[in-house]
Image 1 (tube, rainbow, N blue to C red):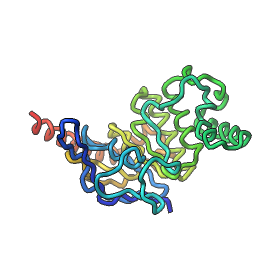
Image 2 (image 1 turned 90 degrees about the horizontal axis):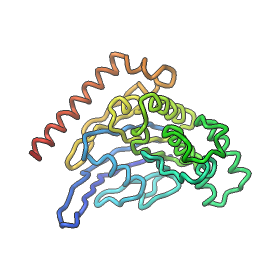
Image 3 (image 1 turned 90 degrees about the vertical axis):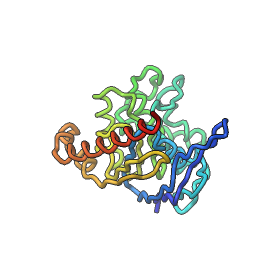
Length: 265
């Protein structure tokens, strides 16, 4: 089993001034293999800190994360990360970016080339293997980033605002691609987003986090990701149920933001 388990995770940062910032408090959940989880909340609720802890870039000050029954204590190949800006090597070609991890592992070149072509086709970039990455649009670069992550066959895919910098139409196409990859690969995916609509579309489970310290405020189990596999995403967003949950969450986050502003005023 490739379940991700968060067990009473706490995270406190000590600032250069000596001040302590309690970023996360008592976060516990289980993300089962093959689930698609979106996480949102107001600014400062610890969304990115949570993701960085799971990626192994940070160590919690309390509690632990386990994946495949092993404690996470650093980065590992069983976890893949997709960043907001792709974090690509722009001077390399598309194919060289995609197979970067395989080259670091000194994988068989012929087998790697076959996998690169396979993943470029899946993400809609067939024929672009020899294109310098800097010549691609933002949306195409994010497709490269997805392929680079997936070619290494991680158990868990972590996405930190991966579509946030894209225009509306490209973002919608990429949302459909994420759903397609989730369904076809059976991968476990956790996506951080500031967009309530995107969280609803891309989360069969959705966590709303509250500050401060960051904690899980409410969980939703939603049908919209499954609907989006067979329907136009714009049609999904027109559904009454979608609108009802969207307004509920927007009000929830708005109230949190108001509370934060009240505390800091």
